[in-house]
Length: 345
Image (cartoon, rainbow, N blue to C red; front, side, top):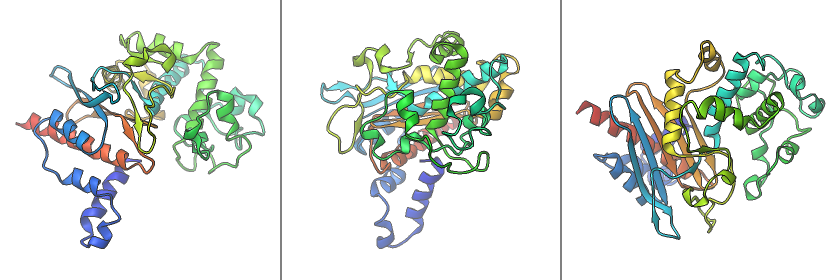
């Protein structure tokens, strides 16, 4: 769900003046948008808990100020452990920013080419992925490949795949969704293949490359490739409405603290993460902020140029209809309004 979609829902709710029309809009979204703006971010997070989130953590890195850490609700609801702004969190698709930087560095070193195709790198997929002979690495990074998204498979999140082979099998021999380069569609299969291509080129797991080229230079000691690398008690619990159990034991990929993600995002946006020539490559292929969703976990990594502020927000409650996604975006926007008001006062 994009910010534009969330804003559109609110505009519809406020523009239509009849009870019948408004009945189709979740009232919690209207309420969250219309409530008076709190004076502080902490008050806003406490309000978010009242909207139904089990836990929220926020990290703010604003130019000229010390980093700020906020939390409300539960780190672990069952154990009655309060939310901790330094907890580890499943950052989901925010990890694509790290992958895109890794691709950038490998391209800059001449080890990969943005113009080479899937078949150049993965010839075993000939005849198994439509247009594999013309889908370039660049198109995959930019989500313009047309390859079906494996996480869109029916009931995928009820029993997620665990290996590259299992994930790939969900889209093999499927028709393309569109011709390469002719449209945009967010697709996790692109990055499944990109990670395989990096592994093959490096001859070792690409997360080791990310550690060496991104994490260690930035002193990011609280960013991990998977659940197996962390102390489970350090991971914030995640909850999905209608499912009674804590989801933190599910391994959905990268885990990190909000501060680590914020430090990375600052370096990404100010260019200090790049060697000469790399930032031009990165700018040509990917974006400078991201969000992520897996059951139980919603994450947002944003940079606001007008404030020169990095804002990382983690929400530990999801739902099937994505109402909580829209709700979290409303809260994110209110946090930015609070920062702007504080800056001008």
